[in-house]
Amino acid sequence: MSSLPGSVGIVTPQAFQFDQPLALQNGTSIAGYTLMVETYGQLNAAKSNAVLICHALNASHHVAGVYADDPKNVGWWDNMVGPGKPVDTNKFFVIGVNNLGSCFGSTGPMHTNPATGKPYGADFPVVTVEDWVNAQARLAERLGITQFAAVMGGSLGGMQALAWSILYPDSLRHCVVVASTPKLSAQNIAFNDVARQAILTDPDFHGGDFYAHKVVPRRGLRVARMIGHITYLSDDDMAEKFGRDLKGGDYQFGYGVDFEIESYLRYQGDKFSDYFDANTYLLITKALDYFDPARHTGGDLAKALAQTKAKFLLASFTTDWRFSPERSREIVKALVSNKRTVSYAEIDAPHGHDAFLLDDSRYLNLIAAYYQRIDTELQTEPQADLLGAAA
Image (cartoon, rainbow, N blue to C red; front, top):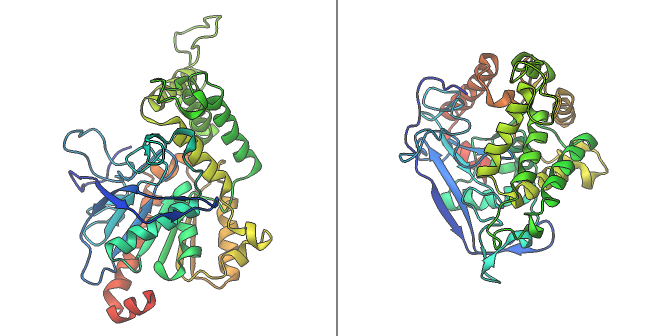
């Protein structure tokens, strides 16, 4: 991934501690948790220019910039967020937050369970997209932000943005949903379950308590990542990058690496197993499976979105077969039926689901133009109106 000119530069994560128990969708609660956060840009006096960025499966609070002690660790959406970039930090105060259950600093399975004095492991509660949004809302309250200029995310992050518009309709002016879906298809759930089974059946998993055994279920994580990565790429993109190219120039007549695509997937799997937590993978894929705003409205998405008040931008990519354009159009149709203000773009890009992370000029220009409109709103509407809308 390349970067557009300009960068937020060196950034420093912040840990926010929350002592009040957070009620979870599964009927339990979690207390004494930490959320890791990064912020970029300056919050204006009215606190009206804040943008919340919600992350996808294997990302984190590190949205943009680099760390002083790790300059190669560039934020996962650094091409999107920064001075002069589509989400311009000269205009907006951007917040990246790592979700509960993740493995990048926020309280998760590898952290100590205060009830036992040992890592949570398999005892960490299964969390949902709605749980994450409720935790993010507490962060907003801590920061004194009553209404976001926008809540934005791609893929699983887009689900969170959509959930924000439903759960806290007065707390965001705009909802930006990229390469996402109102719920997973049976095929997507199947992919997630196969990936989880790879982890659950790894002998080093030890029922989720592998920390005590000082091992990592690397084989399961590798396979899980390989399965997932296949779904992030389009057939055309994979064919263009790898085709049937042979790693060693000829067939090896064995079960090692013959093809370049095999080498690539194994590399991705090995890299993933070095930094990602197996329990976190289980938790996050389950949160993906469970997301379904229309579950309590008889499957009627329009009814589920009836209480929304934000303006919406949705973007999809033609070759994204994981979260296809049809799924974004479902959301658009449901919003239009509720007479919401909706902009929709379907971008003809060859990169599959991963396109939302890449440097497609049409996509980046779309986001930049939309955020320019948001900034114009902030500059032209009286601050009293902005604050009144958040009341």
